[in-house]
Length: 175
Image 1 (cartoon, one colour):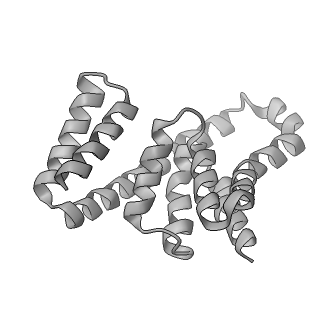
Image 2: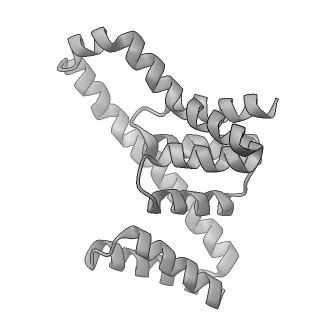
């Protein structure tokens, strides 16, 4: 039953997460944190940070890690397979249709309407992470880490992996 739950936890976001890994992250969070309660919001945010710092698709790295935590090596395999299965199945089944309508104005319009929804979902997830951080470590540390991360990534152009490692070190020594 556990492996079926792992499969569903990553297959459903894979089907509904139009836009790739970043679009499916809030859906995975809902399954892992809210539905199955395998992790807290804080633990999920740490897994997300780790997945962002490594090369490759975010969703598959998260599925592998969470699947491994819940069900060992087989759980990792099931999680990764469940993440890529929707795309694999649809691409094989609909490749001809996709090639026929890829330049269609209707498809482009659909994409234009879906992108703001993805942005809102990611914004809500960021707000929850900020609020959890505020409750866990206080306003001063939350603002310091948020503003510091923004400045380092956006203004100074330091790679996010280094900023994440720096935040881990900061948290390890000062929190």
